[in-house]
Length: 244
Image (cartoon, rainbow, N blue to C red; front, side, top):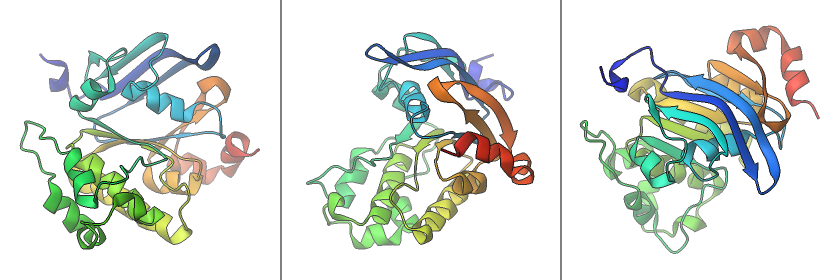
């Protein structure tokens, strides 16, 4: 049986991960799993290693030791383009919209078929984000913050991923736009069976989007896990892990 044929096998499995920036030991012994179709968040204060975790998964900041398995295959030291072809899309907090390229060109740059009846193309993205259709010829870097977030999500969808890594999607957005992003993410996960790992400082957004949460302490160490129901029932858990 191939790894992807096992419905009980995690889509993402990390074991004892150690990642450095130069001599700085940023992630020390991280382990976590995400099941197919699951939406999971990593909650923690600024600087504890949440973004580095996503960068390690996608291959931008390779770990020194430990293992990362995607669909049962060891991808620990793969380059980012190979991990992307495995079906993982990364949306950084900075969004990285390419200046000088139109909205349409930013989307087409990421187009990729999944080989299994790809469902996302540029018309599908425009159907979900009509404002992007209206601005299709506009330089993507001149869009508003909320529109750039839509473009970043749409660009990720153009790669027809199995899993999306979403880093601080509410960063720099107004409460109204945060609510809009929540609705977009929830719709994609529900309608298309996307697996999502989200890093978010705005815990209210994380609770709306994810059903299970890893509580990260300094150096990327996981101090526990909790369901959304458990965190809502005991706000003190959030206070301990997110208060300054």
